[in-house]
Structures are given as structure tokens and as C-alpha cells.
Length: 200
Ligand SMILES: [Zn+2]
Image (cartoon, rainbow, N blue to C red):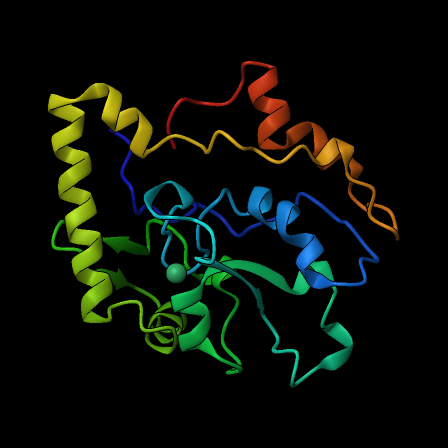
């Protein structure tokens, strides 16, 4: 069974490299694809909510601290508005380098655990064990477990990729794309090639 709150096994290597958009909002389709349609901090998925208005483009190094980095793609993360607000403009360890399995893991009661001081600090700064979030995780773990046993179609829908995968091939970033090979590894390209798993 796919577990809904499993963090990546290794540090994230950027897949895409769009450059030159006048507004950082234009990076959104790239970031959705880059971070698999879920918040890099709490792993809340697009499929579990109303989606519109739920996700922010998070500046890893806050725009107020380093204005020159405001629009640089590699400084942007895909995060839910809740985690983005809690993080604010604090300097924190890179979540894509420290929130990693198996050291960081969620138990059936929804609690998140970390076995490294860096990851624990990251969790604390973004409030990853805030009571409402712990409860949210516990509920989803139980829902997914029930669906896995009793409702295979529901289970698949809860853990599938979104239907509206961005077509990055059609986008033309003004400053080009420093990692063009990422297009063929994008979720849409993998779905079209029959290589995208049904759940994740
Ligand atoms: Zn989040």
C-alpha cells in the first residue's frame, strides 16, 4: 500500500530550469510538476482539497532578505499556504534536503518524527507537528487505509496524480530552460508514455 505521508528517499535534484519570467507566479506549473503536486513541507496533496488558493510559491530564502533571488527558479518551492505562512521569512534548513525518509517519518497517530537535529529544527520552524496538522494526517492515514481495503477505486483517486498535469513542453520561459531534459521526465510526458504509476 502507498503511504500518504512518506517523504522522499533522497535530496531533491531540480528537474526543471525555466528562467526569465517577469512574475514569479509564472513558475507555478513548473513547480507543481517539480514537487509532485504536494506541499514540500507537510506533503498535503492537491487532490485532497479545493486546490485553488491552497498552494503558495514559497521563497526558500525570503524575498525580503535577498531581493535579487526573488524570481530565481531554484529558490522557489511549492508549499501549502498554511506552511508558507508559518515559515514566513525565517531562514530555515532546506526542506528538500532534510525532510527525507526514513529519518523523517509519520506514525499512525499522525505524529511526525525526525532522527536528525537539523530535520527536527526544520519541523519545529514550520510547525509540522501543530495539533491540527497532526490530526489531519491521522485522519488521512485512516481514510487511505480503509479505502485500500474496502474501496479500491477511491483509494486510487486519493493517491493518484492530478488529471490536469501541466504541459511544460508548450511553455516558453523568456530566459529559456537550463534543464530541457526535465521535460521528458515531467509527469505528463511520463503519463503519455504509460510510465506514470497509478498512485504515489
Ligand atoms: Zn504544507
